[in-house]
Length: 251
Ligand code: PGA
Image 1: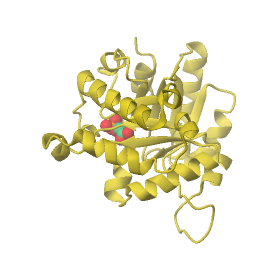
Image 2: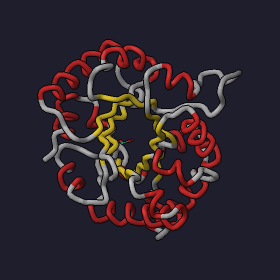
Image 3: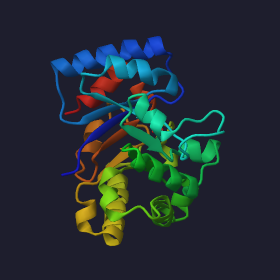
């Protein structure tokens, strides 16, 4: 069965002190009130080591927000998959639309990052999603299909279940415009069907497909009521602990 993930993407927010204060509160809340979903925080690189120490015996896991595909070398400003693991992360967000739009990442580079993450035993949280212009032009499925096929190029079928797909329509990220549960259902069904056509039903049976884009405490329940939604990737609403806890404890 696909696992449910609730992932906090902090982006470029929180000093180590702020991160630790939040982590202590989250850890205590989950100890008191455990949830069945896998709860993951993606902090900035600077906070990872301290958070890993603070959260080591807790139910909270860590993700990096990005990594470089090479093992090591002259790549100023980058960190490798080995460093991601060394800092205590089991997951890595790859191909976020901000990386694609602001840092020029293309499907080819994203494919190299996914391949490298898998080599280090890091689970990629592979982000895909269409822009508003593509949706309005009726190109949502062709965009998703290209991102999936190129992003997963040469990944063997038995590795597909080691990846979580995050459907994040670009027009819904940080805009307050959440996709409707129906729109998410349609996109997630398309993704699962396409991948099971390519890799076989067995390879995709346990694949988690999560949604991201203006998820809040107010819309989490209606989104999670869709059986095709295996969790959420939360940006802005994850920065405040009370707001994130309200999402984690959705009913
Ligand atoms: P948002 O961000 O929740 O602020 O829309 C989601 C994301 O970027 O993953």
